[in-house]
Image (cartoon, rainbow, N blue to C red; front, side, top):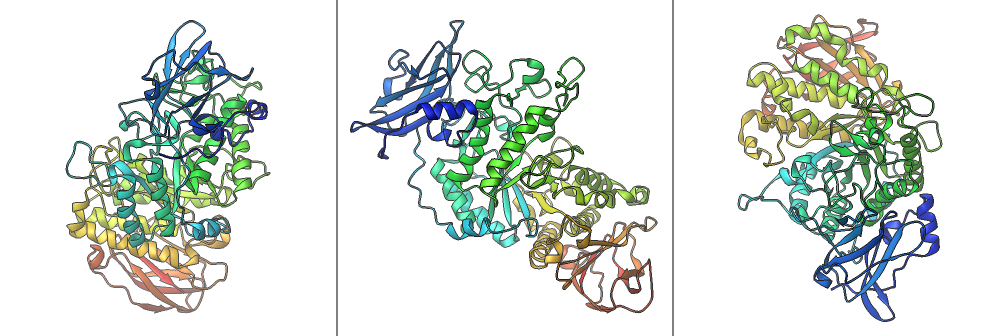
Length: 634
C-alpha cells in the first residue's frame, strides 16, 4: 500500500483560481488523493458539483452506504470535499449527488486516475507517485528540438487490436506486454513517434476511445497507470515520441459520466443547440465556462507532467470551431456577430496553446481540422489558434481519391497530386493516412488500389513514395505498412500472418527502406513548409500520369529527386529535367523484386547531360518502371 506523505486540502486560493479557469494543477486537488491528517492516513475526496444539494462519497471503504460520508461544500464555487480516514489505494468509489429536484445521481469521479474495468463504472483510488522514470535524456532533448525541421513519421496505433493473445475472450495485451512488442517493431521500422488511440477511459470499445468518461485516467483495459507509465518510459528509452489522441470536442452521455453531472449542465452548454451533437449523440463542452476550460487545459498538463506525453492530436477541431458543424437550420445559434464561428472555442484553443506550448515548447499540439480555417498553426502570441501542426485532410482526400482511380482515368485528375503544394506554406502540415481511411467500407489502403494483386501493391508502393517525398510530416495507421487487406476492426488483431506472403513482405521491406531514407536525408523533412524545400521538375505530364520533383536541404547537399509513374505502362527512355549537372545516384527503386515488384532495373548512377528539358538546363534519361517510384540523391 502506498503511504500518504502529506496532507491534501483545498484552500480559498485553489477555489479562486479554479473559478477563474487558471488553476493548472487542479487535478492534484480535485479527485481522490492519498492524504495524512494529524497522523491518520486516508483519502481526500473532492468534486466540483455547483448545483448539488448534497454530495456523499460511497465506496468499498464504507460498504457503499449512502449516508456514511457526507461531503462538505467549501464555498460558493461549488467544490465539495471530505477526508475519509482509513480509505486506501485500490478502493472503489463514486460520488452520490443529490440534485435540486431530489434525484440521486451515482457519478464516477471526473478527476479519477483509474477506473473499474468496463462494464463496471466505479472510480478507483490510485497513487501516481513513485514511478522511477528513466527518460531524462529523451525529455531534455525533446525540449531543444524544432520539430518543423526534424523527421516526424508517426505510427497511429490502437493497443487493443495491434496484437491479441490467442486465448481468452478479449486477449488484450497489457501496457507492459505491448511495450515489448511495439518498441521492437517501431525500432525495426524506424518510426519516430507513435500516436495512441483510446487511452483516456471510455466505456464502449466501439467508440475507439472517442467518447470519453475518464479524462484523467488511462484506460484500465490494459493495466494500471503505472503500467502506462512503463510503456511511455520504454518508448522514450527507445527514442520514440508518444502522442495521445485527445477529445475536447464532445463527451459521452453515459449516466455515470460528465453529462448533467449534478442534475444540471455543468460541463456541457445548457442550450441543446450549443451543448449537443445531434449526429453523434454526445455532449459538447461549454468552452465559455472558466471551470470547464480549466478542466480541459489542466488535463493536457496532467498527461504531459504525470505521464511524460510528448504531444496531443486534438480530435474534431472543426466541430468545435463552427457552431453549425453537423447541424441543420434551427439546430444551432449564431455568435453575437451573427456568424457561425464559435468564439469561445477559438479563445479556448488560444488559451490552451499559449499555456501548454508557451511553458513546454517541445510539446506538440496537433489539430485534426478539416476546413480552410486560417492560421491553425502559428507561434505563440501570433494571430492564429496556436497549434504546432495540422493534419492536411485536403491532401489525404485528394490522394485517396486519385489512387482509387483506374489508371486510364488518372490523367483527368492529374492536379489531385499537385494541388496541395499550392497551399503548403499556409500551415505546418502532417500528411495523415489514419484509421478513418480504412474503416466503414472505405477499404484498407491496398484494397483502395485498382488492378490485380500485383498492381494493387505496386500502386501502394508508388503512392507511399509520393507521400514520403511530399512536403509535410507523415502519419500512417497500423497495418497499412504491410498491406493489411481487411478493413480495420477494433475487435481483432492485425493480420500479421500476411507477412509470410510475397507482396506483404515486399511492401513491409519497402516501407522500412522509405522510413530509413526519410530519417537519414534532411532534404525529406528539414524544409517542409516553404518553397525552398521543394521544386517541381515536371508537374504537368498528365498524359503519362508521371510526376517529378526535387526535395532540398538547407545545406543544399544530398538533395533528392523523386520520379513517379502512376500507370502500369513502362516509360522507356523517360526524360526528366534536373537542376544540376551532377551524378544522380539511385537510392530506391520501388519495382525491385525484393519489394514485390516486377524487377525492372534502373541504373545505379545517371550523369545529367547538358540537354534542357521542361524549363531545366539539364536532364537525365532512364526506363521508368510501371507503377514505379525512383528516388535519386545528388
